[in-house]
Image 1 (tube, one colour):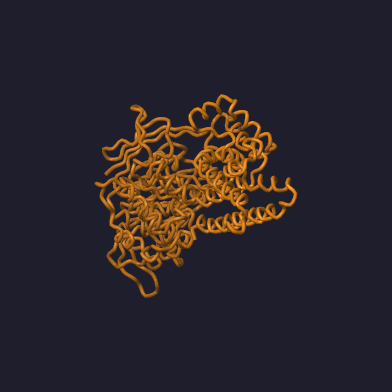
Image 2 (cartoon, rainbow over the protein chains, first blue to last red):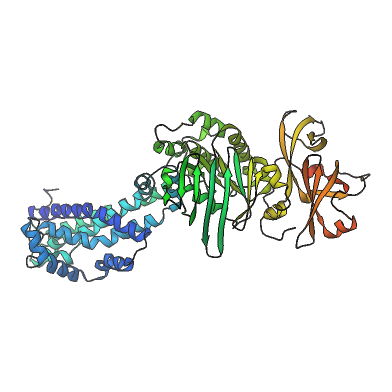
Length: 231
Length: 368
């Protein structure tokens, strides 16, 4: 594959995979927690949290990217504090991962929330009467039953992260090898005369990854239906 | 082993204030829907926190509002058999059965898996998943799962209500065996009088959030004051002994010194059985009827007449030491001039009593 792709294209593909992997992995526990809160708990400000989680879905991505820039940029208080601690994200691949995570978060939470809502709380009660503490109930009953939803949410988030463009280019720009992901690379190639073949190769990579993600999540959903029916 | 419960609880339009003791054997909480039965069971399990009260199982205090004590459900070690089985769909039958054992304290007495499997007849199901079980099989696995968690007490909330008649008849014998074979108290919720008559050791009759009567099953169930709770299923329980089987498909039973002829009872002669006789199956006559198809004509004494709001009257009869109930119309009672102390003949068709007939009558409708 590295023969077929040019070095610049390969860098974009591997950076995109790295960014999406970390964006998905790090936001997974947080997404699960937020999905659980939204599905099961009643608390003041629940609608506000729900709105906040879904905001990146409805805002123009460029707005999300700009908001990230003014909060995490080198001039911002938060950004400079992180920079001083050696955790700066501005114009680095970690910033691209942050932007991808924020943009993918609503999709992830949505899939997980639906699967948590589908779990019958009476099964969890039954587990408690059999001696399982809250943590054990979650690990042995809730989690196995929602696992397909969690995996589907993660795959969706990964696919979304692979395709993130607007927020990424606004927040961390388009630096080859640093912050140039597949979509921003395609955009860059289209600005240069004669680079259409490079763009085309990346387009093919994008289509293949997106298609694989969809098929995988579809397959998991079908297997999950069997598990929940108990067959 | 005894469970003692006293609690007060209330929610909109409902006020619960009860106290009772459940010794070893099956204690049935009996009453119509909305009498507070499930609330009590959920409070014992810890799934619901009552407003006030005290729940003690042997020496262990499960709940005590005066001392602000409330043990979490998973530390109470109750074996809860739910109406809807609630098996874990992602686990096999074997994993479901052993789920509670995982969490049981090391020192807890362990129920033997093989014995429970044999008791419930579920050995062949171990590798299946709950989705592939019939309703009756699912309920049997749920019973096994509760037993194997080494419970201090077993709770059963209408465990047969979701099953059809045939499945009920399949499960009831297992509860009879449990009653006789395990020492932990069983708290069993039901609104079906005939089911209660078969399995109960002790009955706690509930009415609108109060204990109407509690005591040994035969006493409570034959008490006309309790019958409005079971409405149409009013009846009496007779302790009887199988005397002989006749070739025409009938069995002769000794009950309170008289012989009853009933459809064949599948028990060896000499075995003790309980016979549930519904009040509406008993006719009364002032003289011994002649030329009648009914096989059982019993000489009884009228003890009490209980008039309800409707046209019916419930007559409590003494058959030797045992009690019998008859439901007749007020008009008939007046025509026969029935009064306490009168000697009358109770007429019972043999075919109206089947030992396995379970009268799960709807609890709505008027009382006698």
